[in-house]
Image 1 (cartoon, rainbow, N blue to C red):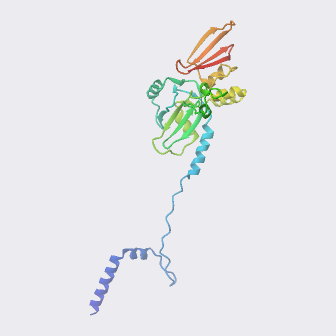
Image 2 (cartoon, rainbow, N blue to C red; image 1 turned 135 degrees about the horizontal axis):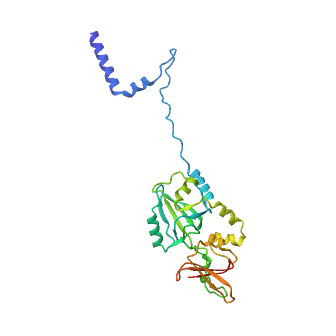
Image 3 (cartoon, rainbow, N blue to C red; image 1 turned 90 degrees about the horizontal axis):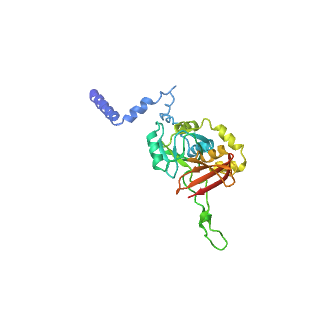
Amino acid sequence: MMRFRSAVTLTAAATFFAITPGYVYSQAQAPAAQGGGAAASSTAAPPAQAPASKTPYDQEQARLLLIRDLDGEYAKALQPLAGGKEAFKFPAGKPLDVQHLQDFVRLHGGPTANPGDTIQITKIEFQSKGVLFEFNGGGRKKFHLREHLSVGVGDVPDPSGVSHPGEGVGGSLFLDYGQQLPPLTSAGLRQELSSLLDFSKQSSTKNWVDTLAPEFKQGITDHHAVVGMDEDMVIAALGHPDRKVRSRDADGNDTEDWIYGDPPARTVFVTFIAGKVTKVEEFG
């Protein structure tokens, strides 16, 4: 009889543990009671949490610092750069495809900046998978609301002929990461642009511009020539001309015209006498 009861007890116990494995695990993990007291709690400690990633606010602040560091910086073009509305796209972390760049420049009206020209970064825009850099004001002309409100009404002059020589003369570059933007640094962005732009020798140029008279400094910032500028100032504002023409005016002065563009497209003529700008004309 005793053997029968023992067998029944063992069978019941085996069945209980087989259908309740969690009970076995919790009992095995629970520390032993000390001094006859109650057993310690079997509640496991919460797992360690991974460090929190940057919040949107932190990311925005980091990007603002990048803009403050790079926006307005001068650089020397190492390759011909196209103007116009469409940005030249090049991949991050890969060598520059020079043939692709040359084809892009040719198909977009030729270079707006040639190797050796000084350009200025005038806008930085962070997009989902890349960074857009505009230089020399970008290739898009701005919308001027005042010029579209009234035309030739009463004594109000017709504003349709107003010229904005500093607009639409630049271009843009798109640094393509092909995925969500990684953490960015100023040094890293300069390195990505280093096949196109050289920032290393331009700090002296920026300091030089800051010493100029306000009207010349503004002209360089707006990328248009101003009467009274010398050749270096015009190059800083517009880059090297497409061609130069020497002649003599009606007063017998030797003149030199620097010509930017080709008619009938937008063309700028900058006339020098004795190394100083005496006239700036724009057509187209």
